[in-house]
Image (cartoon, rainbow, N blue to C red; front, side):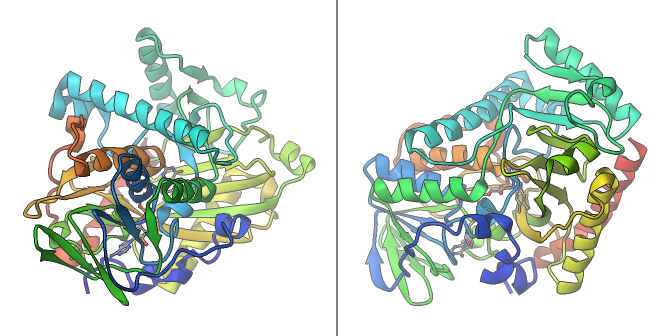
Length: 444
Ligand SMILES: Cc1cc2nc3c(=O)[nH]c(=O)nc-3n(C[C@H](O)[C@H](O)[C@H](O)COP(=O)(O)OP(=O)(O)OC[C@H]3O[C@@H](n4cnc5c(N)ncnc54)[C@H](O)[C@@H]3O)c2cc1C
């Protein structure tokens, strides 16, 4: 067994219950399966934001590129996330990043996060992708008095450096249409926007195809062997040779594709439910009318936004088992939190619920760079639950690496992810960490 989670998490129907997939099934053609023996210059494993952005930029750079996905483009986290295209990508906080990479390293990381958002916006514009964009940056609301004070201090600090953040006092929430039980005021960071994650990822797939990339579905790569100066990727019904390789499998990675990845990543779940369309009366009853994307100050945070068609999307981090019983438990927990935060909607149906895998690393920062021991192979992963912008950005860096072009990888993303203890059982490290985070949230 070369995967961390139960098989169910990797099966095609783990996407069942996902609102985005029902709302936008996608183009009415299917991507071909990989059959017989094929060849390309650069192969990309994984057709999410990272792999498709890499493929698009590779094809635009003149490479003969083929993308292989074990299911289909957008099947992974990229087609089932919350749609917050925002700052982020690391779990490490600013203080830790400054200590480890210096003030310049921190500034570089901050710039990369902004540039990543800008890259998504420019790809959407350039390729005419309809992605249902809304929200002016994102707002973080405090879940406790202490967190509220911390956000107030942060707003003052950022304002002094000239950043255009807005502090929202608790007394202003009603006027902003942001009334949720247990949440106080907070901070709006104007960088970022919300999008329809599946429309964006399938738009990227379309752009990559138009640029000349080949995209294969039902093409799980089970093994990589050396072939001349390059590699052969072995799949179920065929194989493909390539001179260079990009691995873009993030939370759905296997420990043995390639072997170098073994225990260098930690998949964890995130969970989402979506309501029926809310009426104007529903919205008024709760006092939540904003189209702003919002998350709270918890470590095991909630993230939510009113979708443009009037449904509420409500997400929650946490979950490390993919059994049916655990899914039921997470479903009950997220529904309980939803009702607590939005009591006026306690009777509102939430017909959609699903989970997906995000990816952590042992250093709490993402990685983009070479795969050691495999000359010409590169990998990018570990977006810590924030991969819309950072995965897209990393895809472009990976393309440049594979094209042999110069690329400035922020130093925070350059260090090899550590191998975690306990190998394939490394999930066992998580329960105490999650318990610790829950206690911190409670004390904060
Ligand atoms: C519920 C949820 C909510 C989230 N909310 C947000 C959010 O609001 N904002 C945000 O920025 N991020 C969010 N994320 C995280 C974000 O979705 C991911 O960071 C991002 O999509 C990762 O993109 P990726 O291309 O690197 O990986 P993925 O999109 O996961 O794609 C990896 C692909 O690799 C394929 N694959 C794996 N192994 C193989 C193999 N051996 N052979 C062939 N194919 C293979 C898989 O089929 C998959 O399609 C969320 C994630 C989840 C699950």
